[in-house]
Length: 162
Image 1 (cartoon, rainbow, N blue to C red):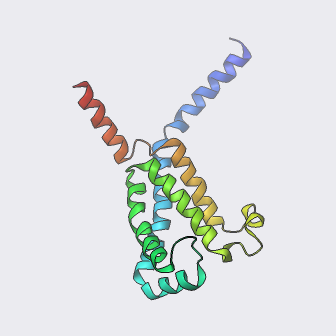
Image 2 (cartoon, helix red, strand yellow):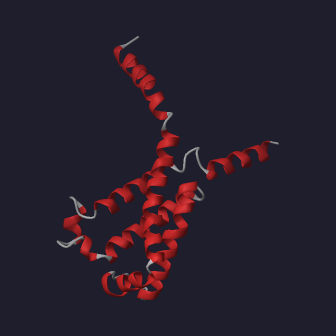
Image 3 (tube, rainbow, N blue to C red):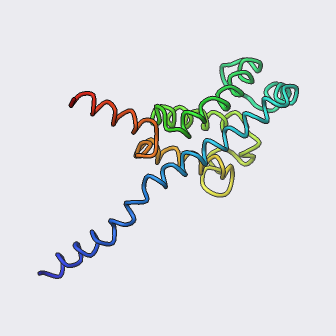
């Protein structure tokens, strides 16, 4: 066996166990982001006057009125995390939350006091950047086997073959 073949074989053998944790890793990614959005939604829901103040005086959501933005922001953060966490319509939900996360960052200029592009690289709005990267992984890889999407896909395949 040639040295390159031995290296590739070793690479394959070492990679198999790591690949087996992908379903758990995807589940943890989904739940981490889902909990972050869910907690933000609960805070908004529990304090409607504080939420109204934030959307009227602090956040600058483009296009929407502050009242509509507060209502939508609260309910988006209360509903979509369940879809993401359970793995229901996972890729579209993750894509939606990716865009929502971006709108949140753009709407809250206090996150980037030295300018958006200056804060894009560095330690400004770190949580939002981490959530965005986690959502991109879910968009690229899907929900994984520990999801309702995967269970429905299995039922669909059995139904077609039977």
